[in-house]
Length: 409
Image (cartoon, rainbow, N blue to C red; front, top):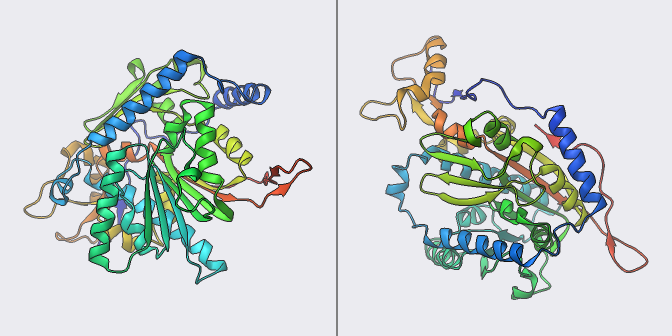
């Protein structure tokens, strides 16, 4: 019997899945109440705050500009090899799901995309597989954007026919992207923001600028989707640790604020280190506030799920893709190979393996080390749909956002 499609899922250290507590829900309600009473809070920041914002943007841009381009061989030997592949699977599924939704209504439609916070172009080939017509790539790190363009040209040489593209180096939390487009009248069908939106939650004005850039050229019935760190998960783990710091051999997170009274709506800063990928401060995204802000820009939440639940939602449909991009490690290790982590990191897989019936010596199960899974489960995926505007007496767009609960795993 072939066990290679079996998957053993690690659990958290206490074996429990976090749920929103009544106390946290109260904190969120109070925070949102303060936001409604003073929606422009922190909009016009004092000079020292503006300087801090500028300094943080410089730190982020410098970090990603100096991040080395890794070759395939080096990435294969990375301690987060399976984590990165799993993240790529999540992004691939999101792209496929929402390009399919657009094509359900117009199969032959030529799709135009905004890839905001694109980095070095990690999704270049995903857009090619999705058969889109045009992609605008934008990111704060100029060197990353240059590398993205170089990778695009290389892909074009290999593929022959490829979507058209343009590349913009800009701070998407402060600059108006529409002014920088070759065609300012462009209408996007999809906007993707992968692992980057949280940088905009440094301040209310930055979050609004980011959402403006995302929404203003997204056509009605188009989709905005992406991935972000799960603020509740991060705070929950930090509160159970010493000095609000937690991690393992491949990552470390330290809150730079006291979470006893909840966390700030904006500027909830934490240090994040992920082996070979991230080493700079980030900001928590209060998801409830994010949804309310997005609604102001005509974006209605249609899906959200933590990565563990995202896997459960889509693993059956996209099982072949999981195998093709090698999302999971074979356990036990095949002859002549070693596991990427220590034996203790596979206790869950060992137990699962021992309980399997009718297994043969050559059979394997797919799994991930506890260390990598602890990072994967920090993240969540989301998707919004752009609503059609209704114009008020002053000529301003308003949106009717459904109050029904969105799909949430």
